[in-house]
Length: 393
Image (cartoon, rainbow, N blue to C red; front, side, top):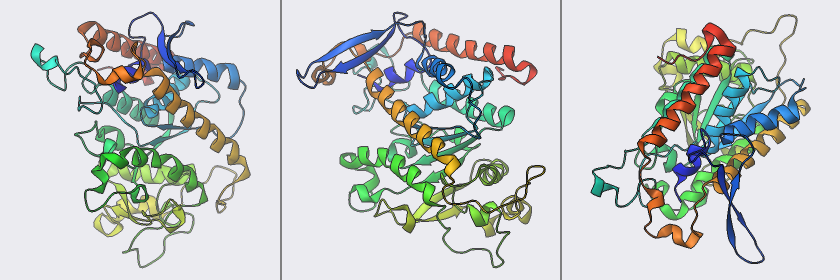
């Protein structure tokens, strides 16, 4: 089966006959194809319905969504729909963990039929970069209209090298971007990150590294400012974005990213040989000495305090955030399971490696379905948000 099959189900029901998914019987070893038919036209709609049925009366301080791989797309689209519907638990922060966007048929991914070239189709035919563009537009809209913060954490070549998938720099331009080096997964030499034998480990490494990040924010590699900034600023209290950083500090870094026109990023320079985040060190690019004082002022000064509240140092793991950690972990797991279960094919797994017609490039009707799904989202935004809805131009 093709990763793009699962990707499509985040946005629409491809055949209009229900969302396909597989169940596996561990006792008999049999895989059965099932159809989910319950009035929902996409996996994102299922996410929204479940949120309304379980958290309609939510009155807590914060909800944060974490999505891994193509589950990051689900986290973003579900969040956008929840904000359009003014859900009380609509997330204020998104953590996208090695977010993947399909792009090519590369043998490994089977996203374009092997015989497609006979019909004059290249590897970019069909949906092209629809999912990446759609997600980037949602992330930008959520930041501009709803002040939702997005953090991107990458850990593998699947999301960093364009030959494997869309890097989606447009999405990164309104988010904090942290690149882990998961060398503890194995591999040798400068090209170890491209070693297919360890690619799966590197792709999944972003999950534990992010949640272990609640232990604190890793320091920056030298050079550092000669005069320490305010102890309450992003540069001092959140030198590298992590799960532990307060929203106000992440917002400072996102604003710097916007001013830097998407060129800001953190690259791991130490601690990559272990999964323990306490020995991690990151290099900030562009560095503090490479940009103007006006830009750096965004992260050197303390963020504004809410009216009537005194500023306090943030503890490493506030008790009030424990439910957020659990909610994020559950969503992350559900996104991963959705990616696995919904990449359905009518043939057994062993037959997925054989030539068949199920991997052919999407037809014009399928592309039309995608655009209709996108247009529906824009209409929902226009109805609920008025003039501040998504711009479809």
